[in-house]
Image (cartoon, rainbow, N blue to C red):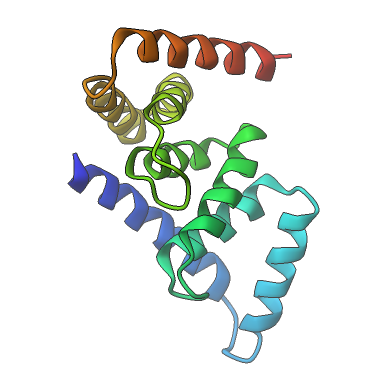
Length: 155
């Protein structure tokens, strides 16, 4: 399970790093980071996800799990699917947010419903893992929240 999370986050970091560094020279990178921050502050879900990934990895900016979780949360709440798994993992592990199995299950459930391929398989596997750590009332609450989130995002 941990290997699946690491593989997923590794793909995210490679994607974000490639996006930031493609066709740039080192002197241009600070401006690209400022532009990314500006887009994220303006509500761009993809930019929010990318900032979250950069803060989680700590390769371009200092590692900060609180910032990472905040940006993943903002992006995920807008329905940006790539943010679902990192946010769910943050809640599962308590990285940058208080450990919260209900929230982790909620986001793994949303991810399982919206993602495809290997990412969906990771979401399903992780949802089952976190469900094993929960009591039946917590599972029911997480499922209710996921239904509400899915219903609200369909409007």
